[in-house]
Amino acid sequence: MVYYDAQQFEFVADLEANWQTMQQELSQLRPKDFVAYPERYLLDQNTGWDVFGLYFVGVKIDINCDLCPATARWVKSVPGMITAGFSSLAPGAHIVPHSGRPSGVLRCHMGLVVPERCALRVGREIKTWKEGKCLVFDDTSEHEAWNLSDRPRTVLLLDFKAPEGFLPL
Amino acid sequence: MAQSTVNRKTRLVALKIMAEIERSEPFSSVESANIGWIKEPGVDDPPPRSPSSKPTLRGEIQQGWGYVLFIWNLSKRIRSWKNRARFVLGLILWKPILPDDQ
Image (cartoon, rainbow over all chains, first blue to last red):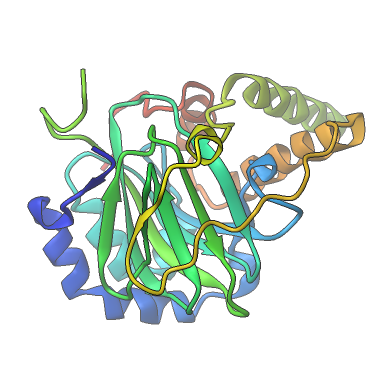
């Protein structure tokens, strides 16, 4: 399975109910609050992919959490949350097909600013992000993402430990 | 002098991380298999990729420097040294290594 039915995860309803608060906190950030995601080789050509981390590998990024207190609170409440933050894909950016190593986590994207002509392919399935809606997928499946619009696309990105029985052994 | 030593150490840590956390390998088995996509109406197919170019030393150095900046910029936003260390070690191992402090 590549995409999961997001609604089966209890935290999803809470995140979706509060997406506008998160979007509002996102809108107050300055470009310099974001950092370039280092895995540039995943980008086709040298287009932009920037992140604003709230938690990375379980470690709180204190100053960023202070800037987005409500978002930090919501992501902190996600069971098994490991990494969370905003992921911003520049206009024209294409993250080429790649696959994460098995690490027992699932990835959730919640659309916050989603222009036209943006999509995420996982396996054979291509879905578009929708503002305030979550997509949950297994990032060990081959996936790629693109933003062919003229505006940045930003999602809340969340890695969480897969509940028992959700990942193949 | 002390600053230079710190910078050198930071670079060494970053290069080690770069070597060890090659977490994602780009490839395209599905694309090359020419399988039909399952998608919502009106959604674009994946865009074509640019022809890949040979990796160069300059590119590798830029990649390494990108890791250094990433670690440095995020570390600056972590208040305690203990959590900074957890952050760097967590990136190397690509997993949380200690319980979170409340």
